[in-house]
Image (cartoon, rainbow, N blue to C red; front, top):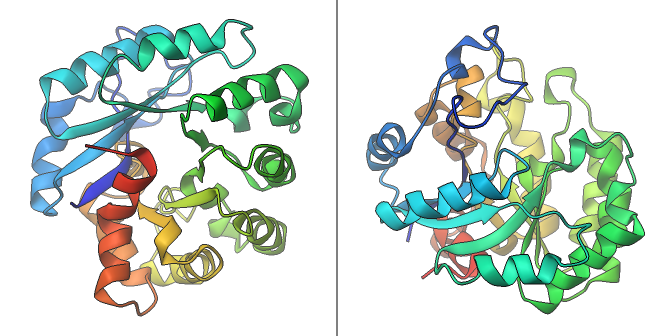
Length: 276
């Protein structure tokens, strides 16, 4: 199974994404399944995991409806209010759908870098652990310390770092990211998506070689068995096409055997999210 572990859809008429401004011309429109399917086919991918973009149960339910209508959408990572005392009831309702496979919150947009360690948030994350629902960590280097505390406090909670925690590739940023993510990788319940890298590099001048140092570090510290490919489409269109993002990872990976590559290109995502 070859799976893109991280892609999005949005309808600007349904959900007002304030960050998608006219200045971001390549992505300033709606994107749906008919836009993505030919791109997956061109890269010989069997399906994808559709990931939340908006802090909205309505968006999550819309995504689950799309997943029911399109076989190639193998799973949906939605959103719930982790601070809601009744969050387990909400998750229970989402779990009725066979393609619901995880939860994400846009942590790096929270004003508090320690948001993940708030008492009410930790209670919500503990609920995810009890219900065996994975959590996507959408973070940047300043949030790695809080993510580490979450991993330590919830050893049974499956966690996956989105976009390798967004190092400042365009600026050659390294130490604040490399050390923190290495400590996080020391916990076996934490995995990592090799995604979102070309938009952290120079949008107009990046090369695959710019990513290689970061990809190699992630694969070395997590091991290939806890890494997975993600396109971050259509956000990636700010810096290149779907195929550009796909080829960039192909060209950035260290030398690996066939089994390890099969894992990164899909089998690890299927295992982590328990996709059918």
